[in-house]
Length: 630
Image 1 (cartoon, helix red, strand yellow):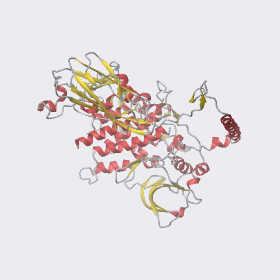
Image 2 (cartoon, rainbow, N blue to C red):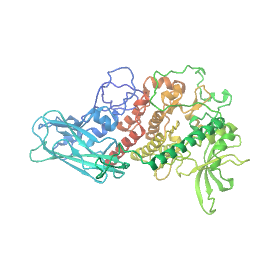
Image 3 (cartoon, rainbow, N blue to C red):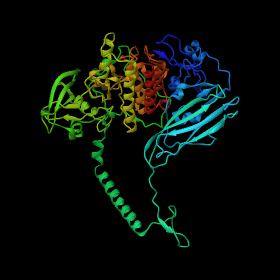
Image 4 (cartoon, one colour):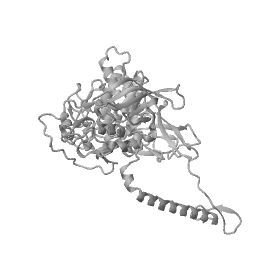
């Protein structure tokens, strides 16, 4: 375990493991602004470390650079010459990337090739890009643009001449990226800037890549009116008065809407009581309780240490997070009859299900490899996961399996695995069916890879692991857009197939199949303590930001091939441990840049954690960089 301290952006010591979180030097690409002074343990900074790999300039071998300089590019003094600098200001970087820092493309004639190689996304509502530049001596430039779809976007315009000299004082030039509004399309923009940095005759070519989503504008309805002389028809969309037929139409629509609104209110009042008892929500299991909800406390203290009191005082949170969508994990009593009623529409006959091998087994739950016979054609079969319970399972445990299985129901994404059918026939133990993934549970797969890592024919590379992380982040980004909070993201709740496609699934039966990953802190609820954010542990508050925290731990699981995080920390001490700034150590063979992504996910303030969309973009760029070196 390590203590998160952040002194003056120092480089980490050569060794890894116990020690401070490693942070690279600021280098020549990204320069932080207003970082707080040295203080006792602080949380990891927000997205600042994410782009360090992308922004450190490295000389190109074989282009007038000594061999020693190729190996140690940061030790080179700046070349003697015109001393040109070109960068994005702190406000511009914040607008594009959400980071408070300056992004240098050229600094004292040294070109940041990493920054130039990436295609930055321009928000659809942003029409202007601003570049800051200056030169200490005469430098000529030429500017040009290319776009791949002139129908969707006008040719970019600048507020400076296309050809001239770089100003000798700090100046800003503006590039206008205006959509035509004719079609929906993603536009690729290339801005080429030629500079005479090293020679007045030879140009140094800089290519800036941008992409922007343009949308089709809704056509404005224009009403013809005559001018004062009555000679011609003109259009006045602002002051035009509607015609008689238009007035009648709008009055009719208004009356219909009013009637519908009144009927809806009456129905809502009449059915208020039943609506409170039955929630038709796709994410119903987000407020689920533990498997021992109404069991005696003697069955839930198995995770407690002998020397730890049951009435330990919880650590209180020092701040609230009002701008986030936060849910309380309140326990609600759901009966078995209500749970069955919510899945009745996807219920099938037991005759269509054939159980084969047992894939996982717990105290009361099992997961089978099953076969589902097609309803219309008996000759067609589909492979499926079948979750069910044993004969000794209690009614509460059966209810929880059905309830938690509905967490992702109704959601459609390539990296999600919701349930497809259930079997709730009388006299049969309920069954939940999900599409089959032939390599099964992700955590078990990672551990199997670790056991036979030396001679495993299915050994996975670091690039494969990053690709898995990207898929998980994509699925979670979809959930965040749909305002669905998972609350139990971990490798144990993901599945994988032989093409290394990863899908997130629900946490039904997870407490029974992975009992060492869940602990009861004296509140009669088994929770994944080691994967939970501080606000979730202390205040029982969950949001997309707390899912980001769990994603950081899941990424750590991937890089360690299924190890358990915080394994030597008592679950009762986790809240105080996290509040003091401690985090799990950097895994062996994990790149500093990837560990920086994890560290950003573990910021104490939920507002400072990255969004899933930002994590997808960052990991995708890192995956591409890994592929470039393979």
